[in-house]
Length: 540
View 1 (tube, rainbow, N blue to C red):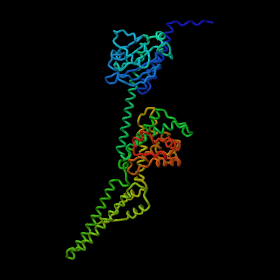
View 2 (cartoon, helix red, strand yellow):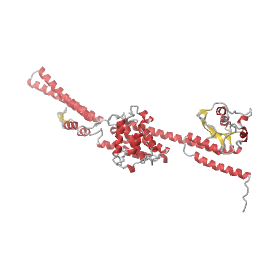
View 3 (cartoon, rainbow, N blue to C red):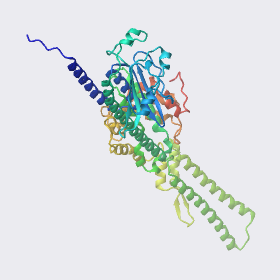
View 4 (cartoon, rainbow, N blue to C red):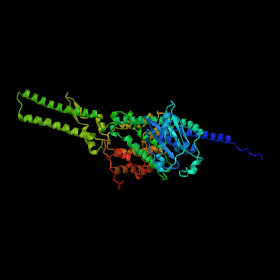
């Protein structure tokens, strides 16, 4: 049997270096994946501690004119970390930052007095630690500017080794960082720089997108004042309910789980679910009563015209009578004339009061419907002496609306906002994490029994995110205080309506149950936007 040739020291070092380079490649791929800045910095330090086999590490970044202590990890001691600005004292990190050079020290407690920097032992004294070897390296951006430093502390012989804080003999055995460590850290710092820039770019893109969403919601609400704040409230409720569904272990909901990215997708879909209202006529969108404001003004002017015409006609008729009889008016006739004019005016005002009553966006009672039929046949003489109907056919048609303020055509126009929303949103080049936004928003007015709109699809075709949003959308509409066409309902009554719709097939019963039993409506964020709501704790 052929014996394996023993590995020489140079070969061992080469293999060790190759392993570290492979690890650096893996770290590079991980760090350049999309993350928030703080998450990126924490990953940087934890991966550095593993790669360089040390006990602790920290990272400092430039912010404005100062250098800030951003993140720290120590495998031996718990750290109550707080981000803070570094003092002007020339410590190891500040020197590396200002000089743009690496700092590699075997033992920080053996620094010569001539060294251009000092070690701050405050942390060691405070927590009972013993810092020994340190390696600090500047982080440069693509322009070559130093934007921060990465600091590694206490090189160890092997991973998982406990740092011998109080054992002097063991401390002496601990290795120092080598020139190879420094060279590898130079490559690592370049990766860190790219990761930081990537995280900041992602943050800028995120801020830009947030700004777009905020501006879009404001644009919608500037046209539909009656629902101002609705999108934000629905977004808070929807995300909170989605989290509740995510934790639900019931048979109906246990298969629905949402990642952090999916919750973000749900939030944006909820914020933008009414975006299509921007394509609905403003007169229809803001129609608070059955008649449009212009129609109401036209009726009032017409009534005033009939009243004036009747007064002029009566006075002219009496004047002609006096001329024919060649006599002066008498007091008795004048009073009778005034009474007739006043009675006609009162009749006109009675008609006007009826119109105002019929114009309210409430359910049309049978007695009012009969009075409207009578009113539709009333004619008066105008200033030209022609008989004209008191109300035009289009006005009677509007006043005959059985419920609410919209005609069937106007309701269909309002409902078209869902399709407009989908058409607008699907034109946006969403990232893969947000690609479901158009479809989620598209389904928020569909109902599980197929009686929703605009597609009248059933539960199997409605995304669960849309079913979650539908519950929150209805609840907010019921309890909102800013709808001039209806009063705000008490929470208990709104919950009862949700539960009834869950039983009768309008809403997903399990989602309604999660909303009610999870008391999602008590969400602090939602409560801030609805200070008028008062929850009966016992009844809820």
